[in-house]
Image 1 (cartoon, rainbow, N blue to C red):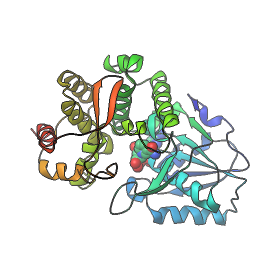
Image 2 (image 1 turned 30 degrees about the horizontal axis):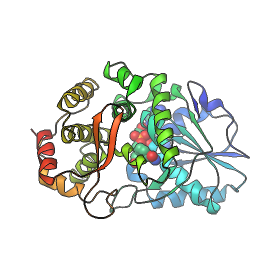
Image 3 (image 1 turned 135 degrees about the horizontal axis):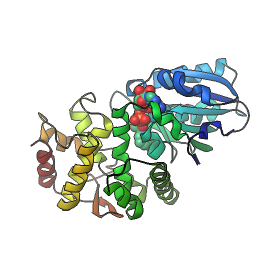
Length: 320
Ligand SMILES: NC(=O)c1ccc[n+]([C@@H]2O[C@H](COP(=O)([O-])OP(=O)(O)OC[C@H]3O[C@@H](n4cnc5c(N)ncnc54)[C@H](O)[C@@H]3O)[C@@H](O)[C@H]2O)c1
């Protein structure tokens, strides 16, 4: 894992290197990747994280004569990272992928851990595979072109990771400092340590879902277009802290989110529909939805049971 300005210049991967990028990132940053043998462009946006786009990528790779001796470079945010790595996992039954994340979300979270996939009309991230990247090149210089609202979306994941990690990362985040390279490295280390202990999400990895149960439910109920993912997860973090009985931490996190321009409340949302949507969470295997709760920074538990009435109260509070 290379993190820092200029990381895209590292010659990572075996054989020829073929980049997959979206139309926005490609124009801005593909020139920073030396020695590319080819480039496949996909349209930007979550709505293109589909099997139809994956098929376009597979066919473009075939047309360019990509073989198992070559490497895919996934250059972009989490959408490109998930989709290009899914294509790499499945093209000729699997070729190596190098993750080259260009959003804050991707540099602190999605580029590590090997979860790849696409969305179905029925649900997000419902088809995929585990495929660990051969290398990760997180070039922090690429963040200079990131729009502020995308930066804010990534900030939510930084706050989430700091709550999980505790310690110095939490202290820096709680002090309200802007996200630095040191924080990006700390987030990457936190996620990698968790994934190394539980690659396939059988237990501890579920703590990374902190804030996502209510977050995903809010996204579903509001039709995926009213809230950005990072905004929804920020609201989800507030609900999770209420359910954890940590009112002090909830107030502190609300202040941090608000200072970053993120919402801490949402109007006109049907709280009961949100609670119903949490019951359809992908993490639920049988019985009730498992919750990730916070006893304190650095002390996060998964698999907790929570009363539906308490969930309803925590969601209603967001709608006030
Ligand atoms: N695999 C995982 O473990 C994991 C973890 C978290 C999130 N995700 C996935 O990540 C996705 C969200 O990632 P995202 O927020 O990076 O979204 P994204 O890839 O859609 O990027 C957001 C927008 O920013 C643009 N962009 C990217 N880099 C840029 C740059 N440097 N300068 C200017 N514009 C740039 C993109 O073109 C896009 O329009 C979701 O699909 C989510 O499911 C995956």
